[in-house]
Image (cartoon, rainbow, N blue to C red; front, side, top):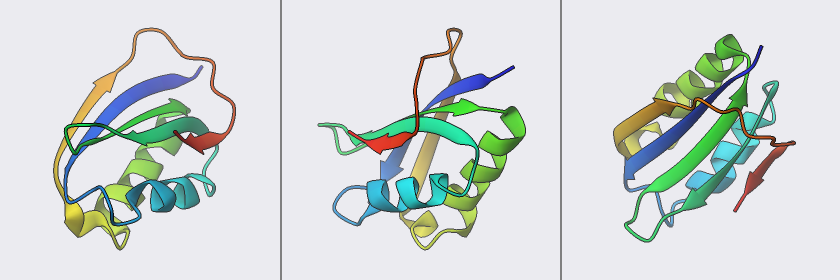
Length: 91
């Protein structure tokens, strides 16, 4: 059974290739989702998949990627309803 999370990133996450890097990292995992910039300078992401795949993906993005140092704050919320998402896209 799949899980779904809505994640907000704060920090220097716009104008630094964050969405592109997120999509590139996501391609290495069996997950679906999307990422987009918000008007308040945060980045929002929704991700769907196996909880272990999501955890590994988030760890790589948030701790191991070249942009990890740009993230100042992370807010994760597990979603009650699983959205129907195919692939991983930038919105």
